[in-house]
Length: 454
Image (cartoon, rainbow, N blue to C red):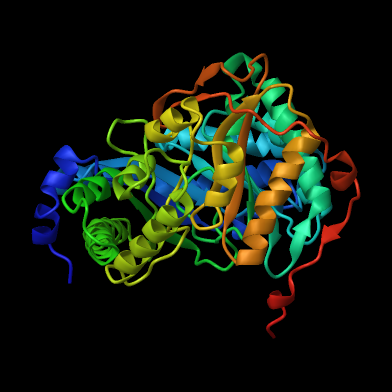
């Protein structure tokens, strides 16, 4: 049983160490909203989301005020729109109209984002999938609160290289069409391998078809709390270090469990999962990179960084899984560049490269995240990076993702400002040797041998 006394124990964490509940995300199935008529489908979607999530923001604010826990975001995830629009969308423009409808809903309800303008194409693309993917640049340019994701691979199916190639082109087009806002559209678009059905974090959240009609998922975050706890055991051995991380993760996750249960009760929506992920912000002291430095590396990217991150990720899971009945989503340590001041500093000092970040993603969630690159990067290079990251996820049976932001007119050494939780980022260099022949082969990379477990 969770009670307010457990929350009181975390008062210092909240007040001084940037502990917050990063998001309450309501997942909503839109399968029963499907109709052969586009206008009717949009009407059904509007009615269902506004009915179920009408009090989401109000309830989140009430819980935060009552328990003294900052709840930063209130969000909605929906059934992948490529599925929902499959019976009524005949053109990419039709999907854009659905995106506009979702954006209208998000603004009326006051939620930060609606995630699920998505397609799951790990083995192949339907006509609707392809139409939605091609609509993404325009959809993200004419909306403010919509997030898009494309699942291009999985351990069970392999990697759909046709989708990977197309997505490289789509990311370039999205950057170009939103270049007046420093390619902000790309910050709301992510390519994923092994996407979970219950992820509460954007931009990769969608409500999977395995989920209930509606669900409450919560994402907690506390990099600052973990770093502060570790500062008290400097010089101690790895056993002490690991125990400290586990105990801290347990306390942080209990806060999330309380909020999730309370939101579920007040909204009369079943509780889904608590996501344990350590998600940083641009705020000083709220950095995963700072935790790695506290563990013992001079800067993120130094030798030992991958091992330190593996240790951190594992101990967070071990501590958090004991604190909640249902743990899910991504549940790891995010390492986005633009959203983590320690990562930004490491890039500026030359300690951290894309190649080192790729190695780090082998042991943590979720991938190459919020990385600004030169605007003249080739679409095939983007596709090659997506394929590399998807291969890590496929082989290691984990979720990996790529959120690259090619900023038109920007080169290595420049910086780009996104604002808010998205922060700012230095433009990072990218390997310019060609992978055109590889990306242009077409078809699918087969699933690994260990996927055959039936």
